[in-house]
Length: 340
Image (cartoon, rainbow, N blue to C red; front, side):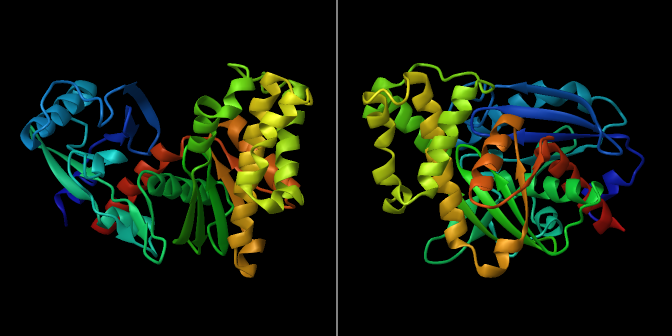
């Protein structure tokens, strides 16, 4: 039995879990059932650590400093496990210790069994989840989202929906991921840089010159109408010409007064998300077109993606809860099962 497994089964009643990304660090104190007892966050992502120095020893010391400052008092309590689970960019080549990508197919058990450990001092080990890689002519990677997928699968089981058969799970964001899961096994995923492209086009291209600084409120009917117009244009014959052609309409519809500056923001969002969904569907094998679909994230963003999917004759359930913390607990639980 590993030391981590012994700690889980040795009468401890709370655990520390970390979501450690590029720009932020989020720490959770979890009960023995996985419930959130406390949560903290700050800007100490891997590119904003406290302290100074970029050599290997200094970087390691800065990671340790950030870790102990955010979770030290929790770990000082005798009923807290001395084994911490972390996910995200903390496991990248620029992180505390690199947790190499593991290839598909992958499962939650496989992720839990491939974690690497860092000695944080004072008898504490930090176990870092690996990312995932799909090899091929166009390789694809994820880091952090694999833990979210583990959390979504746990949520689906607890919600009585099960993880059998085929699930298509969407994680919209800066780099949207669409993950194919079959009988609980991750078998394929696609990445769409939708959020980053939206930011670049709206802030640093000619399209942004006629846009307002802020869009309309999400509940405004004009915002919904502009967003829907973008989705439908992406799904239309105009969309057949591809994204590089249709995005210019964001500017021309403004020049012809068909869209206000604020409406152009929602229109461009709809156009980009519409093209994302269209591209996703174009790449799906026939048997995956009948898969059950779940979209995970903030309520507003999930609603936008569901709207785009409905235009393309596809529906989805929304999972609004924090999939990352649920996934971190799933990794802890998987380790506990290995102990048995």
